[in-house]
Image (cartoon, rainbow, N blue to C red; front, side, top):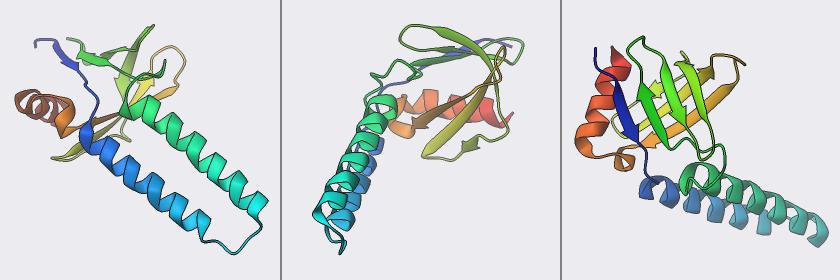
Length: 137
């Protein structure tokens, strides 16, 4: 079996969905019948969490963002982040669809879960199909 490598690009689909969710959350928080201070607190919390999601999964600028995945010949995966590489196994918690793959990797040495969102527009169409085939086998 050949080792397959996938360079994951930022997804416009994910950025659009996250923007809609963020704006919807802000709209809900701003219409709550509670004190202004608590609304301000909630707006800050929603904004900070959204910023984290944008950096980690949307723009892939966070230190833990998975930028490249490579399937090894032994079935394990090599994950490349901005500063580190991890050897991991694919967890059974992963989900594969025609538009989105939610990949949960379990790091070999620490058993820490490393999530990776791969939308259809994060790879070329051929690479995305190839990834789906590899994940389903």
